[in-house]
Length: 380
Image (cartoon, rainbow, N blue to C red; front, side, top):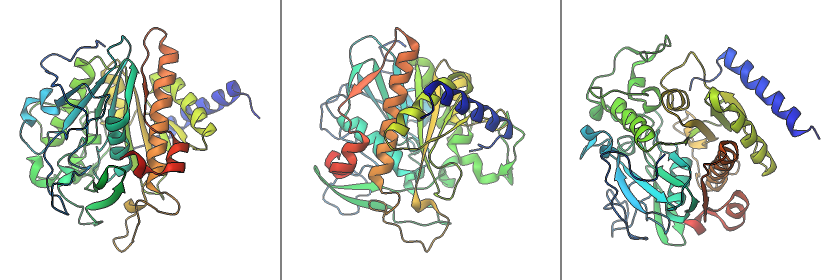
């Protein structure tokens, strides 16, 4: 077996070479200024069920989460960007504070509302995790607007039923981009991020992960991006993770992308997950492609910034493809959720080890082996 040090050098070399090829285009323990944290009772819904496909007030994971014993407060994106208040771009922000000094970790999911493994992993965190050191801030569904519709070019069922230990739950499946009617600006013929020479289809102006760092007077995607940047700044976030999914045919599946300033942490995460039977590729943020979370979060704040991608079979561009998201033979949902949770745990541990005095640690969320053995349904 190759020594870990030698493997680290090899992985870093690969990451640096990949950057040249541009293969990826894709503190304080109190609340931040102006963000009053509302207390919450464990087990109570964070909002009112809406669009329930079965009726009867059943909670949907796309629109609600049941705050678990670790949740100490509730915020909104609009606490950081007031123009979002009471609009289609506002979304819940959950605070899990250990009450002990340490680092602050931001976890974001649902940037693209058709990438359900990240949203489900974030929901498991909210409902199960208990911080032991430092603080977690979790945004389970960043793109609330995208959850309001299904992509007509690649339609999928908008609800996935789960018979969970807590009862019948529904995973909401939405679209990748902000709804055109919510953006507040028609799609241009082509879109280019202000800091990039890359030219994209006009609809990409509605892609939150091409909008960072955002700006106040911009359309909806840019203001949602601005809210996240303000969380990073005002909450003095030390480490931040953006959870995504990609088509199984995409080169982005099973990958961790790190801002160049924290590649060393990502190398160790790759090793940790390999020991768990999860093979992640490693890449670093491109200098050419701008507007992406791992690049702009890391460049625009003190946070160590990462993006993790798992494969989602429903994202293949074949409208006739029938996919069982829960029990797909190659990529069942438990496996994808488990990979995200393992990555979060490893990023937290390796950041804590590298930072010295500041640590973030949480307990209670299932690991990959436990999800394989007991099933995702046992933790929802």
